[in-house]
Figure (cartoon, rainbow, N blue to C red):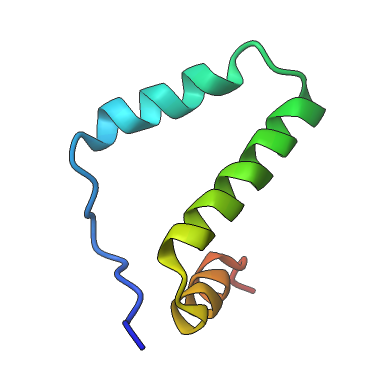
Length: 64
C-alpha cells in the first residue's frame, strides 16, 4: 500500500485551481456538485489504492 501524500505536489497548482474554478462557473449548484462527484470518482479510479483512498477520506473530514 502506498501512503497518502499531503505535501503540495501539483505542477502549476494555481493554473489547476483556476481551471477547476472555470469548469464550475457556468454550472448550477446541482451540476457543480455532480461535476465534483464525477471528478472524485475519476481521480479515485486513477489512484486505485483503497488504503490511500480511505486515508484521503479521513484527511478531508472536518476536524471537530
